[in-house]
Amino acid sequence: MKSKSHCLKVSASNTVASDAEQISKLRASQSPIAISLQRCPTWSSLDPLVFKGYWDNDSDGILVNTGQTAYFTFDTPSRPRLSGGPLIGEYIFEQMHFHWSVDDFTGCEHVLDGHGYAAECHLVHYNSKYQSLEAAVPHADGLAVVGYLLEAVDAPNPNFDMFIEGLEQIKKPDHSVALSAESLAWMNREDVTNGSYVTYKGSLTTPPYGECVTWIIYEKAVQIGSEQLGLLRQLEGADSVPIERNVRPTQRHPPGHSVIYVKQVKSKL
Image 1 (cartoon, one colour):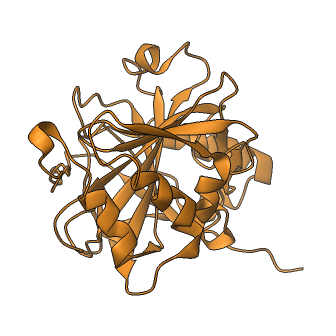
Image 2: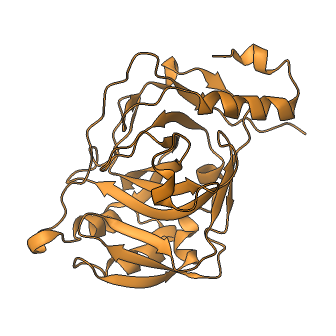
């Protein structure tokens, strides 16, 4: 692994390219994992991720209760695209879903410095060089998943209002509702999309658990009101039973596995 000082000796453009290539060669592991930020090598040379066509998309999306989670996708061939950071090339947005449990501390899948949160949101993307998500899964560079940790607080977060209104209409399995791209406005904040994050090579946290994912987990949790979060817990699965928990336990780190802490440093004018 390159040291930070070595990164500073090459040009900015070469640094970004070589760092992304270095991350792409990391050894993969099963996900999710517990992460200690102090033990991670810290890099500050990567650019922030670039989000195109998410909350600023003219097309409507569809929110579905799959019986296992709340699942959002766009009903259009023109999908949002993700690039930058540790990624080589562009990744196409496939879907967004959530994980949660019965309390406010075990609903996240990834754990940072021993701190658990109420829920975790995953934005799933596939590499644009493959034809589809299914075609990308067999490949080590197939998927990129952006994870947001959700922290339950007393006051509702107004940026979630449109999305919460959608949850109210999909309580039963297989129910769906159309939502505009504005329902993703909670992500349209500098501290959400441009913050520091950890990245590593890992796996899907649902079957088939393929080790094909570049994970990007933002360090700063996104606040959501406890009552708003309660709408997730009211979603019903099989036999009209509420989905109480859909979290995979943390997995062991294999030898040689690496997690990188990408610290976003604002340039001084």
